Image (cartoon, rainbow, N blue to C red; front, side, top):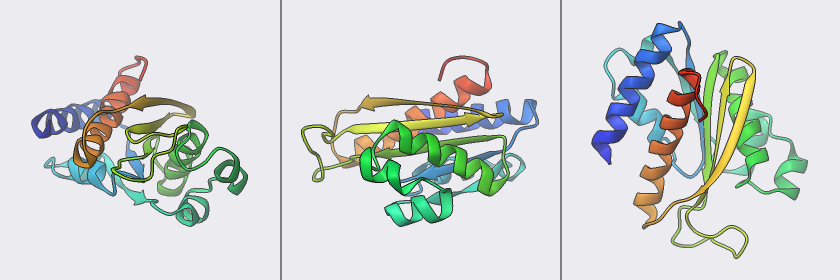
Length: 164
């Protein structure tokens, strides 16, 4: 999985550079793993601006501009939240592209409505923001790494003009 994440990071960087785009990340359950994967690529400072680890809801609200009403009604793990996180990261870091991740990595924290492995992803590119929810299998590490992989793949697809 690590090799795949490195390959996706490299391909995403090349695609961003080809279109003269910059990227930001907003991470919750992955705690900086996506930013770490991107910065492991030599030359990433040409296209990666930075990110926000918004683990607590107050950070989602105060730094990324997620509306408290969304967090109160939909929760931190929701498509509405990751849409706002991606948009907020792009605005905060003045990028054309941003990705966001929020989920339940486990092994605790799951509920019947939001079980362990449920992860929401958001992508923002040139004013368009989209999201999806997936259910990932495995332990905490597998869910976190799988989340990074999916977020990078979605952003790469979007930069290439495809569905995330």
